[in-house]
Amino acid sequence: MDYSETSFSPKEIETILGRREHEIDLFKSGANLTGKRVLITGAAGSIGSSLSRAVAAVSPAKITLFDHDEYGLYNIRNTLEELQPKLPCRVALGDVRDRSRLDRVFDKERPEIIFHVAALKHVGLVEDNPAEGAATNVLGTRNVADASQAVNADAMVLISTDKAVCPSNIMGVTKKLAELVCRSKDIANLSPTRFVVVRFGNVFGSSGSVVPLFQHQITSKRAVTITHSRAERFFMTEREAVALLLDSLQLGLSQPESRGAVFIQDMGQRVSISSLAKRMIHANGLIPDIDVPVVITGLRAGEKVLENLHEPGETITATSENKISLATSPVKQRALQGAISGLEAACRLGDEAGALRILGDWLEPVSQNKDTANIHRLDQSSAG
Image (cartoon, rainbow, N blue to C red):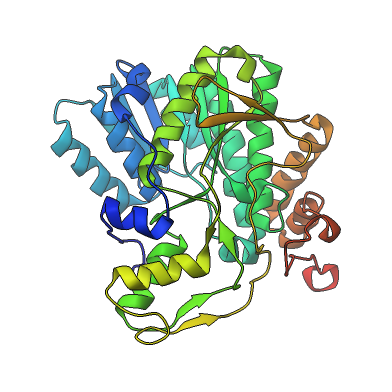
């Protein structure tokens, strides 16, 4: 069963999220991409596809779509050919973990702007496959960053997640390390390339998110499953997510003081997952707990009751965009390099226990996660 296709009108999304979408002008946000060579990793995914369409609309010199999903690339290329038939577009099959493949594509295409969307983002799957998560999310990000520097690109933009804040699960830890990889390079300032890190909340309706799962459960009249009655998350619409990437790129290129910072959008208040599920049931013309049961299943390994957008100790400053702020904090370079080296060895050997031990050093201690009812713990005996 495919949970990736979910369609709601803007009014329905507003009702379900309990707030209005930010005012968005994607043409204005993407204006600095006109005439540029742009490469998007993870271009076949839900966010990558939306970003690809937005970039194509502002007439870049060329767009390169990089992904390991053959059918997804086929679809997004056909879409862009219909929308912008004269736009030079190349699809490149490959995996961000394959450094030599990345280098060949970058050397041929010479992208000026890179959006790094490719990632493993499903908490449960990455929890069960930590070395794979590290190989894609950490080492893959390092590979894309190095390739961007090698061609002296103007900028690389990384999508991160609120789960990287005080991470309690393996996916969150890998994205925190990905943030640090890019922030470290941006702070070092060893090339003309800027590294722009953008921290997302949940994207409403994106593949792998809770919304398509709930919709499938509702339309099939199955019980809607919620992990915790008080679970809350930050949500943004797909258009808000794309606009945040484009606006953050503009800010990063125009404001040197943003070097090494994380760009974060004001997403309003957290959304109650229980309330979101019930509003979705109502949006389908049904009544919660009468037509469709709502069942509490309990938190899974590594899940929190609440997510946060900022870490303790981060300094928050405003930008010229009133909905976007900057978060800055020190980067522990030696610890980061040690983690990268250790993960490279562990992933090369398929050493899940070794990857877990390294990632475990970056997990948030239980005592600092008081809102979390079930923290991922490393069981050294079972891991070994």
